[in-house]
Image (cartoon, rainbow, N blue to C red; front, side, top):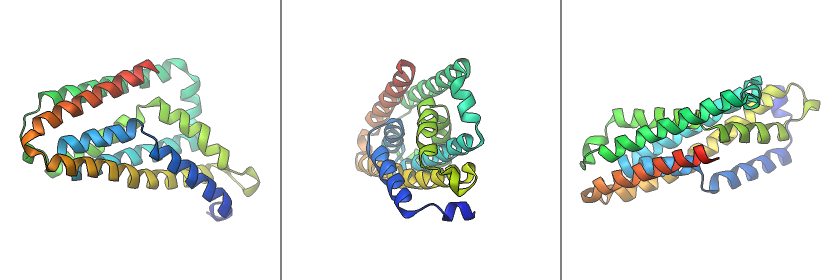
Length: 206
């Protein structure tokens, strides 16, 4: 714990600035949360943001214990993760496309829990997040302060907390818009389906 408090203020400031730049740039997490918000309303969009942030933190834990580096170095394992993630997004897109037009029935706790879980899975099966964490987090760790792994986890926690705020806002705002367009909620489902499908194509193409 002492090693975390030993990290100087300028390092934290640089890390927060880098994290903010990342989270303000349109990417898979942002689009996923917006799609969930459009489909299920503000609470579902916010839940998706919390789930994406949780997945990001789990990535940082993997980086801290070195497992992420091994996965990224193994091309087969890397591709399996990528294809599983793409298939999952395609399945979600299909479910959204087939959904009915009644938005109200999707605002219960079960849909909120599903949005959170789906966001976690989608984030964990996105190898781009894995590679980004491997590239970013160790850059701010200082071996002279002590063990690296608690520093990486601390940076990962801060980044995940920022992601929860940013992605939660994106998803919540998208949900607020969809809440005002309940008569067009079937259209919201179709838009969500297209976004999920586009994310799957992007993962497979990279």
